[in-house]
Length: 248
Length: 308
Ligand code: SF4
Ligand code: SF4
Image (cartoon, rainbow over all chains, first blue to last red; front, side):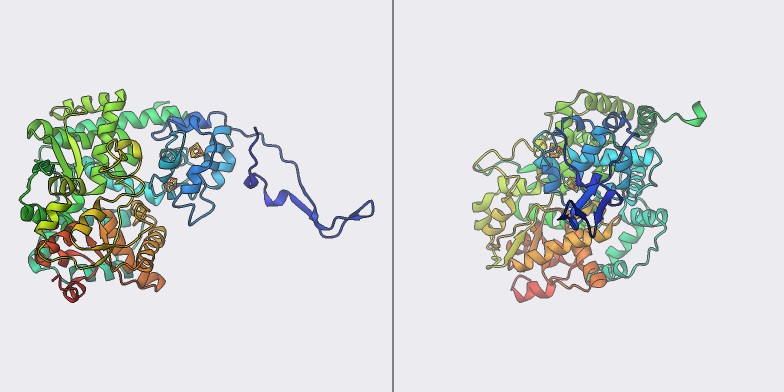
């Protein structure tokens, strides 16, 4: 059954005559609206499979388009363009070009899992959002989003030492996204934070940034994780048909 | 039946060593005041948080499984308590994945061997939240008996956030009828605070999202979501929002400041960990439960209420 998608009708294809009379009947304005035909030829028939090959996208094929995910979505509530059901639809029919039009907001999913809770088909739409965000970046359609950059800064630290130190994460993240560390609201927050803290504790917090907290004897885990990361990266690239120049 | 969990493994996690230190302090103080034994997991590592899960879910499973392996296999515990919603969620998720998915078992087995520790197997350990811990080990009645300084009608909005209840399948013990926790209408924190004298307001956003995932990467959305949580709590008549997650807690405090600075919208509702509120009710001094470590300044308010 075809699903009516308003957003597939582009504004430039909507034609309205301000004044029109046909066979003596006044069909001015609204009444004369017609939609110019549009031929879509650039389907990506592998799109669903590509998304399904990335972590989180595995169950996309189960979707029956009920819309419960969008209906319950935290981000949809603040931005109506954020529509997981619609993107799942586009992916499943392979309309890559349409999907790319929303490529700049898909990463904004806050992983609240309201969609996963509501979904009657166990699609885990939250995972599909993550898979799609990764797909956009791996395929080179979008630069790395702030969210992906944050995940990377965080994960690199965990992989390196077993633990994270928040101050370092904030600094590294701001550096990587070229944001100034001194932002008015952050300064105000730190001011309020340290107001009641005894000197001793402030000093410990300071030391923490030099003596990074770490898990002892992490070296072997670090090496094993690095190997896994490399294997997984190669697997993902292969699944998306991306052949590295170096290995060609 | 308040004999369970008298001695459990304690997994604080990274946030409780940093921005969530007040939660660590108040949790330990609460355990001490109630005569419950917390033994910190030795040489623990990060659970993987949402960030590693986004990069590679299998690695998050491995990281969480290492913590559980130490608690169960090296230290011989049958329950680990994690106060942080993120840690709690991730340990639960790892447990689910390892019971359910061969590929996860393979990755964990391989990485554990290479890293030189025993691989965790599903069923070796039970993961509980700080709420389960107090609820089971002490219970409402036990808590009521020990209250020295009742919260005296303090009006509280209980905020549980996302990770404590969603997705449902990783919490098989929830939604099991009377006595169990509910994923749509969680009440464990409400129950405990009521036992300590608080009045729980009708708060419709108990499990709404604070945008913690993007607190820095998409601050505007986080501020919007948090402001909604704060304003709704105020509209519901709450003086305090009680929290049970360091990410939510810090998010609420941070974006309360940010909303004031960037949007010019000031809210006055206080934000306190439920462990802080329970500690105060047991007669602990504000410093003992880390009130001075919070960003939002509650000291004056608590004095006014006779709780400090
Ligand atoms: S809730 Fe599930 S089945 Fe319904 S549209 Fe969303 S993903 Fe598809
Ligand atoms: S997890 Fe993402 S897609 Fe799902 S409801 Fe939350 S914000 Fe929306």
